[in-house]
Length: 467
Ligand code: FRU
Image 1 (spheres, rainbow, N blue to C red):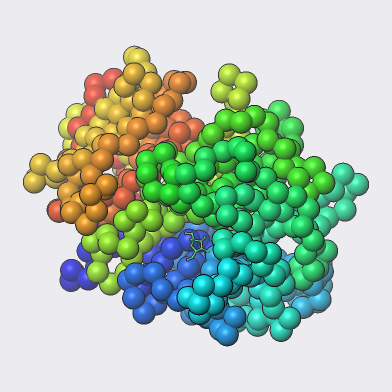
Image 2 (cartoon, rainbow, N blue to C red; image 1 turned 60 degrees about the horizontal axis):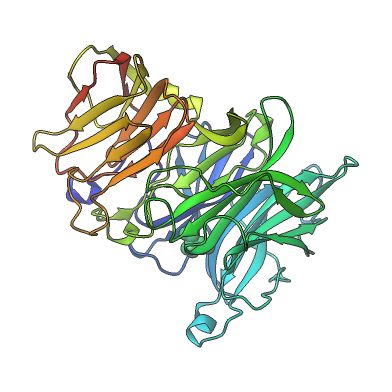
């Protein structure tokens, strides 16, 4: 294996080569989950954005497809979404052959360079062959800039009105607020409301929103609004906050003013959900970019940069009367399990791709140390109500002085069990099936070898994972 492939994950999605950031255009159709992504094929740092493309039957095994959207005279192709237009409301297909409609931000780099302010607009494109080829709409842009430098990342969702009729709803990040638009045909959009100027975290610009209709455990309708923010995340740099509330006549009404984070680790950004996946999943499914704008462009991978998180199933749960979002690893990840080992004390890791699970007994604390023969280690713990992932001495970190750090999150309720997904350069910690999540990328100088854990962890299992 050449250095060029160092840190290439075994089961997380990466571009074959070049630069990747946000997931885009997620939709499910005819047995395929589609993943598009912010892609610059010619370099391992950010540049003129394209939409890269891959498909998966199960959200775990991915097949690369040709680039879907390339920059044109209106600009680079920034982040956005795609929907299956089942009723052919756009008229781009027919009801027998529903079009897939993508909506994305055009970023006119030339105008930006000349000091203009209206260089981000929204455009659409459609596909009539399961996303294999795309035609851009001739009347682009479909949403013109209204005077803000940051005016991007449209995410469309099919919603129902009180009277049972359906419409297209669009969330757009504008500076540090979210604007809502609605449409009957995906082409003509009307602004219906805005949200966020006086609520939430505001340490940076708001990006990549997603408005998700959900149900509580007791069957009540709630809307979750994901809002990524950069910088200003809880572990510095970029992160995703969310709000829970109602959505009435194109306006979002939050239940409270609490600041909630989707993932308390440093490395999950721009998470959004799949359109049309309700055909086969009870709950919405999300995926995020497993990096952080603080250091994403300098991490020590050579021919490609960045991976996606594992896909996660979202649901609401209740802690003492407050709803929070739970992110559970999708259950198709179980198909990767090859060998399984029950372990009772310090153990050698069978490979760099493993899943670890354990239950917590006797007290609300635990400690796991994963290390290599060079003495590098990552420590995962809960102590005094704080969950931590400590990567201060976890290998290569000289590419950015913020990287080697301890990241903690408060967890006021009990940790009963935990699952860890380890891969060549990442660790994803799910406590109580995702009631608290921390995602961290790691660059050990040699592969992780050993795992030690506190005695109160029981039923400790190791699964070797393999494609
Ligand atoms: C978020 C983001 C988006 C933008 C894209 C550009 O990471 O900044 O707001 O559309 O990346 O690549």
